[in-house]
Length: 272
Image (cartoon, rainbow, N blue to C red; front, top):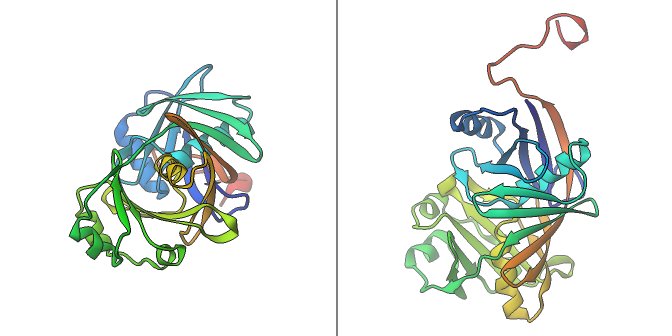
């Protein structure tokens, strides 16, 4: 099995969000996929079976399968194009419906579903877990969105991860308007409940951030910057019930996976 690691939503290695990409041969069971994702240790590993037409695509964190992942989809598309397994626009069949990827610059433009929010009364446990007072809290299908007063507050957060894990939500998305390099909004994303204490750059979160800030700022095209230690940039275009996510990606590792633990040959140039 061929396996890759890709740094997504960045134009240089060792930044952005690393994703595993595993090209399946067919017949692999979910237990193996979960074990591979745990072995990779990335926030998500993408699994796909290359084929003509629409390809099945799944994503696993180190502990659970998830419904939607932007950076691993971007990574999977880039692997297919740069390895010569596909050309031009791609279609992926996923747990979140049909997703599209089109070559764009040094990466891709992803066609994802919008995930709008609704206001939520601030849970006291959330304020305690974050160690910060929200301006407003919204909820989407599986996350809470928390707006703070400034990018500096977002950057300085040091939340209680155990307390976040106990909240009745998949993840907590913290954001504010403005930020470095003239971006429109900043964010950080914490999802310890699914094995991701802090995700470096979260494409799927921008399916929520895009519509939220488009309504607030009165513009459909926005630039978001995620303020994790690695950092990354996501360009967002809101198109009704869809969101276009644009970002670059860099392949940093390519190799072979031996699920049965097969050793390399003891002879020749590969080892002794």
